[in-house]
Image (cartoon, rainbow, N blue to C red; front, side, top):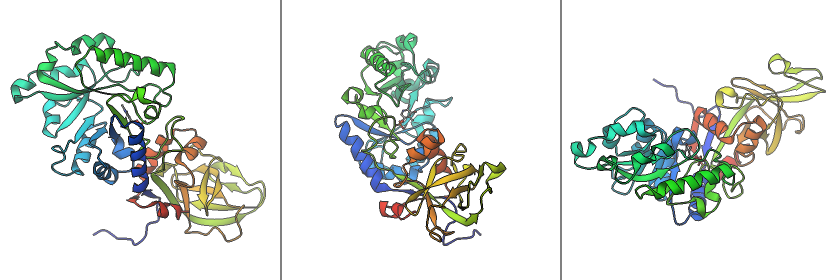
Length: 382
Ligand SMILES: *Cc1c(COP(=O)(O)O)cnc(C)c1O
């Protein structure tokens, strides 16, 4: 028997589906001539595939990008049984990763082949199944992570035996400076991609992600694949003002204490009060994804205003200096916004010296309570 609580006392993640739809339409609007695929790897960046994938499907998204087959099956499981007939494609970015073409075909999944070492697994597919196996292929234009490099392109040319067994649907490449498409290195990667694909069998091409999709039509090709921007996390200098935050996280105040000058706050005296202070203890720590580097820096939002973090981040708690609030204004049981509409995720991440996606992936995945809620509710958080 499990115990049921009417209320929760741990960090709560709210997922604003109105903001998700807004961001989806923003991305659609900047590349009207291209298909928009949703990148939902890592359980939709921590938000939960089941929270976002059915909605994206309803708004017309047909291409879903994940890293692994496990993630692909989770996407498949929350879509209608006839989704494939309605155009569903699930693209697996890690490639075959040791599995067989039949493993993918059994579930209607499309691997993004990671290099020539994966071609042997396709040999004889057409003879075995009387049809060709649909694949996407990664081209390594400069990131040196996955894909076929320049010396390996010959194996992909039109006359190759490969195409007896495989049918290419998409050519894919990924930018080394994904946050800065204007960088010279990105321009070079783009040129290589265009040159290479001009010599290869025709298929959709996909380069743009959350930053480059906003960098002009030269990046769009036939398909863009976007994760962060859909979830309201701006990447690089692009589009911050166009996107709305989808995730908001809050955690409860456990205690408020008035302390005198010279009091140590947190482990090992990482903060010592320079005068009388009021300290609130909030139930949010590194074990919930709050960056460990937030020692005496950064803020959480309490009663609509930023309260500075004092001391270090413990596994499940962090201290805030609330001396600036009226006496009694901050009470145990109030909720602090860690990030959301009042404090953008990227503001907290910048204070910690990490990328916003690092904070999102950890804190969202670790939040003991994740649910969909509207913008009004996320505002009421603090
Ligand atoms: C994660 C990832 C994406 C999505 O990037 P965003 O910046 O979050 O849009 C796209 N392509 C590849 C290969 C990725 O690994």
